[in-house]
Image: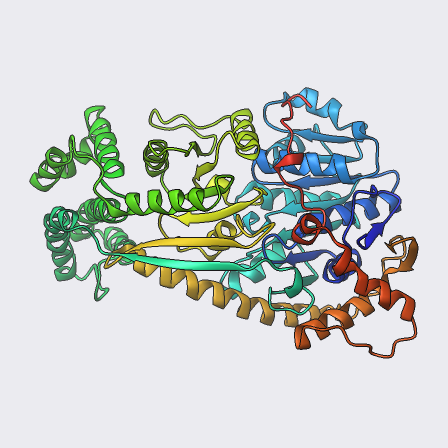
Length: 599
């Protein structure tokens, strides 16, 4: 038996009470909060506990949960039906595939509405949805709530229309600068930040170990030879920009340096200088050449060829400004050389080796390969499917462009179901697979390239190690853009935690939320056949886990409630393997059912 959370609006399936989640819950119920926890540490269960208690306290009102993608939204819908003890017809999911008039009818009698943010924003603007009768807004993957993103606009609408409503933003990665974190808390009106790292004694015993392996690869000589003329082409353009005083960065030519040059060129244009217009043309071409260099050196032949074909097609359709680029000798020579060339980049061979190796270790393994570009996703999938025992499929977003068809919501969910059932054992995904989705038993995750964003790095790494120890492999091509991006991602993640702690201490102190009032009276914890108040459970769990962290043993601290202590000790011994490995309330794809868009 495990410790079970009891609440009138939570089903009996809600098991494995954890002290850090209950502490977070109490903090959230005291004030609008930004919740920051590592991936796979149970942000979703906390969200549903907040929903349950707010609906209990406000029987005449509704709750709203928004998530950035339809697959993630469908997962939350499945979780809500399983874990909330309210009639299933009062839990509804709406999206853009349902006409707004029908959505208006669907939400009328609902207690919990789950939606993508664009739908809520648009329905509020047209007047078919009012947020005034919602007591709670939960924003999942809240780091998106900035600028003109629909998530941020829904937060604005909620704060304007819902008097005394509670707003919970949840994310594993709020940003790497003080400005971005402060702006996020202001946008969500977060009076409180609740965060913990994996090293915290309350979390550490539950954190699955991830072994990260950076694999440095020498760039194939043939690719180096093909890159050389492109570098000379780029160097020549940048030298011209340096002579006019537009490009000022030293060292390796980067997109950042070219973007800065663009700002200076625009300033010259404002001053009516002809040098400004000439510089803009050179900078635009330089950016395209740099893109070509980065593609062939970090992605490979196939992605480069597809990019060049699309660019030529755009030129032929009338984009005459591309003539300087596609009619240049270096462009034509490279196009002809790789026209029928097979993939020679060694990243592809390394991906095949890592996937094959994991399948040989365990034929039932599940593997995810992340690549930033759809071209790479497709070529990796094709290459992997040539290996015996491998059944790989691309997993991309819904948008379609330049003849590149995206996946519909049903296709995305169907793909995840096939992955769950073992019909597919390798998922090759773009960024759409990074956030929130619980993909069970992902024994190995491969980054085809590093990503500069600390948010995306954390999200990608979180796709493994959710249920058992996992392995992450990051492929780096030496002396390429990969190396700079890898260093930037590591630095940003370290900086994120440091800044977050500073902002949290300042914000919590200014709003006096260091010691929140106990708001957990509607919750109890059951261990075996006995029921305890939450505060006693938290205090004894804190004591137990801190001792484990220090000595790896449980010591008797002299507390009076010896009966509860003994039962707490029994929990670890009596948990099943699956219960130990699965975070509280975390569902696997075994609970992820295909939902109709009309539900």
